[in-house]
Length: 568
Image 1 (cartoon, rainbow, N blue to C red):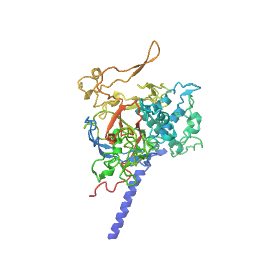
Image 2: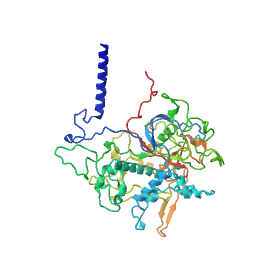
Image 3: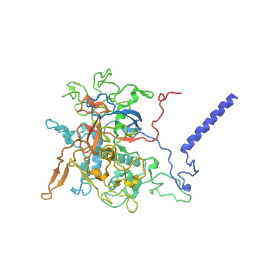
Image 4: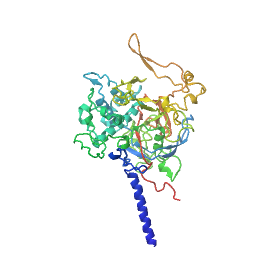
């Protein structure tokens, strides 16, 4: 009897597991009975075969809770690093900073797609695009230093190919992330046979935009400088069952249906990490965790209180590339302490517990956030980020998306440092800020630009009882200098720079971005991942680089940890 009962339990368990599995991958709606991906039932889409994969050059950072802003040494006492408990969602992060060779690929690709000249003359639409992505190599110059060799060679010479790229502004780093999204998706579509290899077709060597591919694929591929559309590039879509009596398409004809976001084929967008994400990834508290508790505090990206290695083979060597004192960048001849007097080749030091290299030292890194001195207790404790600007696609009278360069002219910004950059690239969908009506009756946001929300806007100021128009005439909370303005003199036609001559109380503005981590030029104090500094988003230095992240979809982790939860 007992044996029969055990067999029955096994059979019942098998049936239940099979039922659960079949429900997850079933092509039939369990609530309505309609079939998915079936021409007899409207061909409604369901793709349940998505499998999360680690993107190239990245590692998984498993999400969780940590105390943000908890520094070991606080000699400034400036309220800049107030501890706050935060939760961070899982994400993928570049295991190293973006290198000179990788950024050079971006520069070459941009010049290929948007040639700055045409027939020996500046291209009317593209002439400023190539220069806008070039790193500033002059960041290596010193008034009292012999460093021109780095100005001439650091970015382009093969000796520095695998060194972190520097001289890149926050704006340039942000544009690189957008480009990487498009190129990764382009390569993925080519490899899977959805579109032709456009790198082999000179007539279609044009800008590929992921959003436009999903919204306006018929008009995406065109000849450079021409209006002729080439719709044969899109070879095939997602395979579907043909309806009864439907003819089989020809060998070279488009087959299936167009790819959508719901198919899970395209890569999620690359972006700069938020400050919370970067600090969480650098601290890697998983290595000093016991079950659900943190044991002690971590001062650096590695586990331990000191910057020197305890390993017998490398005992006494520095674990990061940083400045150890005045004139101390690398140690004595024949006994180098950190291996380099400038940035060093990636992966020269051991990674942290997440598998990330150089989260302390080598170069500091841009993060996405707009800088504010305090992240207060009322801040969002779930994936905190300051700098959201909510936008929407611009739609024309025909109900179609507006394309930059086709229906509207390419708009350029002249930055205070004199460089000219496009607001959006030709061929991309035009995005505009959401309107007040878009936020009506919403409880989670009320406007498009949230850069200064709760810290610099009307409600957070001492003029909170005024209306918005009256508030605009009052001194701002963060009275930072206005960016230099470039104007053309009406008489001479020469360009004149107007600099803000008023006395200002702060350098903080909505164009000021956070950068994290110590660098080759910094003292040990800045190696603590919780330390934070800021710089205008249009400026570059010889010690700030960047790396990208992308969001992980689905569950937090690939598998359960055996010691994560105590059994009850």
